[in-house]
Structure formats: structure tokens, C-alpha cells
Length: 181
Image (cartoon, rainbow, N blue to C red; front, side):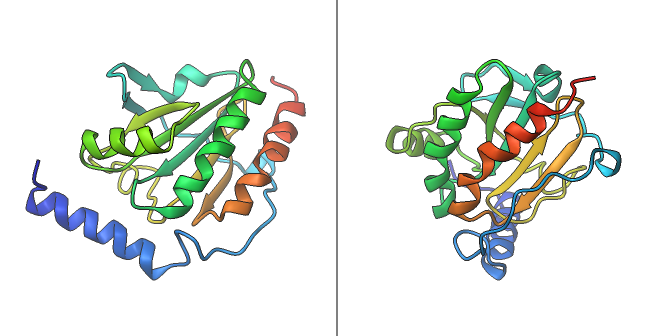
């Protein structure tokens, strides 16, 4: 399927935004410390289609830590993050939800990518790139959002480096140690 002019322009804008920053490989490692709960904003309601065709909403993770990784098949650090996200999902199957949100326009490229780089976590699709507009306003890949059990965005990391994903289990453990209510 050929991209329409507006979709192609949006894709180019997203890719240029990525290229103009240190995204997709050049970011420096950083501490993954959560925002204080009192200053954390609630995650807006999100709804996407899983690659299986089923609907997924952010409210389905209520009461658990939610890790949202926004990625694309053309992003090299996104590829390296998948095994680490899979390990995280396996380590916290009852208390955390890991979902990767692909901004690729075509299902076929996502399926080809996932045959090469399997995902052991949920994969959702955002081919319209609503993550760029809407309440999230993301412009860099990969972007990681970590939401506490009360639904507050406690970490937002843009242009994530591979080493940042190594620190993710510690952040999730910190949030799980906090009272749920």
C-alpha cells in the first residue's frame, strides 16, 4: 500500500524529528528515576488496536504498572529494546503490563519486523500516529512512558538509549514498592 501525501508528510516529519535529535541511537545513558507522585500527571485514556485485531485500552492496565514503548521498524534502538522489554514482561506478569506501540503505517512491515525480532509483550498499532498529536505529543523514538498503579505518568523518556532499557526493571520495582492506593 502506498502512503498518501498527508501520511507521507507526517512520516517524514516524524523521521526528521528523530534524525534532528539524538534519538535512535545517540542518546546518553540516564538515570530512570520516577517523577514524584504529587507532580505526575495522569495518563490520558489511550485506545489502540493490537496486532491480533483486538482493541486495547490503557484502562485495561488499571492497578498495575504500565510500560508503553513507542517504536517504529526503522528505529535501530527500538530493535535492541525488544528483548529487554520481553524480559521485563516475563519478570512481572501479574503486576506490570508492557505494550509496544508501533507508529508504522503498514501492518506488513510490522509483521515482517516481528518475524525477525519477536516480541514477548503486547504490540499495539498507531498507524495514524496519534501519539504525535493528541495529549502525548511525542516526537522522538523510541519514547518510553512508565505509568504507576494509580495511572500517573511517572517517567517519560524520549530518544531512549539501549542502556536506558537495562535500568527499566529497577524503575518498575520502585513503582511496585509504592502503595497501590
